Length: 140
Image (cartoon, rainbow, N blue to C red):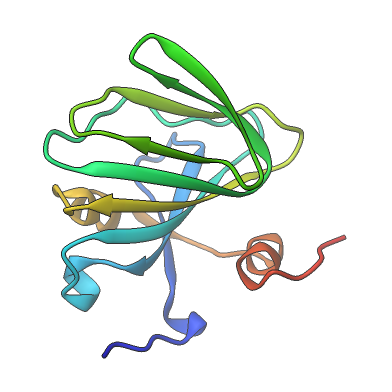
């Protein structure tokens, strides 16, 4: 069993110009898992660069905010409570279209080098607004 207090979470921005960051919860490097579980946070107007994962399925579950997923020439709107599952090798972009931040639980199985990519980025702060969403409390 691996139990992790929230104080152990770390957030990373993969590239300096990225408008999203990931709070790692469990991953192969830190925890020996065969998957990556993170909370992905998109700044207003932010989006991922086009990307795909050759061997992994990726799942997004929207905790807060709204956005659009661009996948395989299609678009789907996302809002709180919506989910998205991408098969391996599906090029995709997740875009924040709302006025505030977009928060998604993100799961990738298997890792497909995602943890290494995340941890190779720059560690960034988890601010008060992020903590309120992670803890399920109101934020003014």
